[in-house]
Length: 327
Image (cartoon, rainbow, N blue to C red):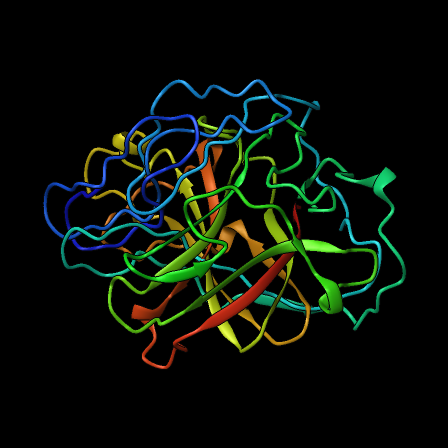
């Protein structure tokens, strides 16, 4: 989905699942939508609506189910059962339709060292998805976020055209078994890797999740988002929030011009587990599509690797995300 003026949004391409055909075309000049495809996965365990189209540009889109659960927003403590370190994230992508910059924002991510932890047996599944501020702890090993506080979406990946990533963009995928990378009290996380990347507008890849299926979700009662992350090589990952204000109408938002300049935060991921804190106050746009920071109507969040913004970015990458929560 393309709008005008030279930026790149992050969303995937054609969707698999219950929705119908994708819209990878673009109008106007130079903005690439990185989110994507049409259709919405109903997601098991909820009452998802899989009949309508949810157009998202680029490579992949998953809508999640529409089950609702929980009450009142509430910030909670970290859901970690044990200590850990690290930070990693990735952007969302789509097929570009013209030249343009990459819609990135924010300053370098804050990482909080959290002591190296070993595998101390399996996690306590009786405490899964608690407190209610937890978006996903991945310990159920599926592709859905926690159905709590009216949140109920799923995870997806996306990438630029002809770019190779794992998990691929055309299927649902389970949580990733951390194995030797497991943190104390955590055996599963989310994973994204890619090879053959360069420094053009097509060189991006994303790992993200919808917050409430095909509808927006309010983050206004929270201060920020936190997660644990680890990368095989040091990376800067764009933690990006797509809101109704910055997302074009063709992709489920309200934006009609200069769209896809989403609010983002550049987080530094290291080779050891770190807790990454992303304060909402530090989110920023690239600046070519200025819109209000409308976090009351957030559609999805993604972790984006974008090769075109850094001449020194690696040709391949591999990172892990774990225990995503609001605070």
